[in-house]
Length: 611
Ligand code: C2E
Ligand code: MG
Ligand code: MG
Image (cartoon, helix red, strand yellow):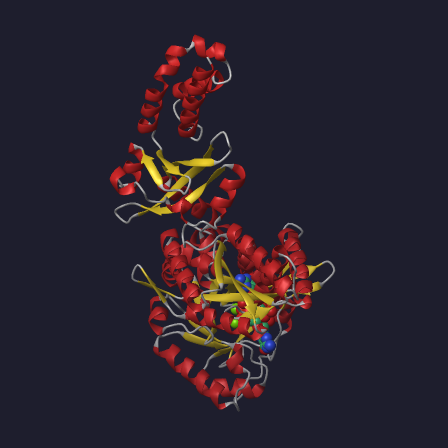
């Protein structure tokens, strides 16, 4: 009996050595194995199951050979003694190639694998390995030590599976979770993680990090006018340009929409950040060619510095965002560092924005009118409608302050429509009261054209107010034309069919091309006040106004000069051949009641130089 016991123990040990590590084997074999492992301790059980036990070596071989995982038995030094079929299937090495070799995981005697095996008898992990063909593959491997009754390691058993595919899917998933699918750049989530690490390191090593918040100028209107496909391609090209502009060690991420972040770790001075911001702006200023269209955009960059402007991810991004907004308000295409002062402005702006949302319903807007004069006769020939916001605590707020907010929030669509309606009604009222007014000019924002059915709005208002189309003049700025050329040209060609007049405002400031202007149904060009200011002494301003005037006349447009404040300016303009003017010299913008009074009381024509 004792001899049989000893035999059984030895047999069990062999089985154990082969199978203890292979817990993943088929359930049937595993349970048979488990049962037999108990039999070792029970001579009674051995008696009862002699038959099953006699079958075990055979069963073990089947299991070993047919397992889906690669298996190998190694001696105490890690040299391979036997392998199964799956080993060959996965690695390409046949038994003859593998015998006597050491598996890659066991090769480095000092490594964690050996230490863990000595301590715990078991090690599992993932390793990169190579097939016989030289192709790399990823394996998940479990190594177990087999000990004899003296507790000495006699063998190692290794079981491994090929997880290359799974790993690939996992990596792909990671990539999807952490990267922006459009540009392939890290997304907010990954960027946050990277910035968190960088902040910890910077705290330890006492260095600075710069965070650049890049927001594209005019992206929304490009997306609206040229379509999302073009918008997406543009974002991809933008991401490439930003990426090429920064160092390899800087991290570029896409926050979403047209917002990008750049993290510059370990900057030497804040000038480094300024110079990179400038480079990004230059790079994005160069025209893009997408689907054979030339597209111009720009970028506004806000910069925050760790630890000065914030000590966590959220604080730093917010500070850079506030700085970026400052640039948007100041005319875009530039960069700006965060400061406490900006933070105060941002709070003010936010308050203004929420109040602006209610201003229309609370009837806080007014339309003021500024006279437009004939330089030939001195008569008032028209008026420009200019919106004012009568704020309950701030008093009259200038449009320069709230129009950009109204544009960004889209509120300009309703506000602009309201101004148009008021102006049309007022013009008709003056005309029916017998005042001679040739037209009333109303400013139209690019956002109104892009984000609403502007033609329908104009048509609706003409019908509703019974306004004669020819007394309505719509002013669009040069930059509106340049940003969405085709769409603007189409819209205004339709509007022109209604009989409405179209003028280009702030001319000379927007780099518009003559070829585009020729395609617009223009009646008039308004020379920007910045060129009128220096007249008559500033030679540059004189040359510019002269050129604009000559060019406009060649194209058949009439010309009006804005911002005329002195008689000398008026005289120069008149001598130059300009026929119309508008400015403080003739009258500041005033409300409708005052303007009516001015029309009533004005018996004397304006003093016109030379008259
Ligand atoms: P703009 O259309 O170029 O209007 C001319 C601006 O110059 C007005 O400023 C006017 O008050 C001012 N101005 C007129 N004459 C003189 C002068 O002799 N000297 C000086 N220094 N300034 C003069 P305001 O009313 O503050 O409007 C500023 C801008 O806000 C306008 O520039 C226009 O772009 C925009 N805006 C005004 N009302 C509306 C509106 O109803 N809709 C839209 N979309 N924009 C508007
Ligand atoms: Mg205007
Ligand atoms: Mg203007």
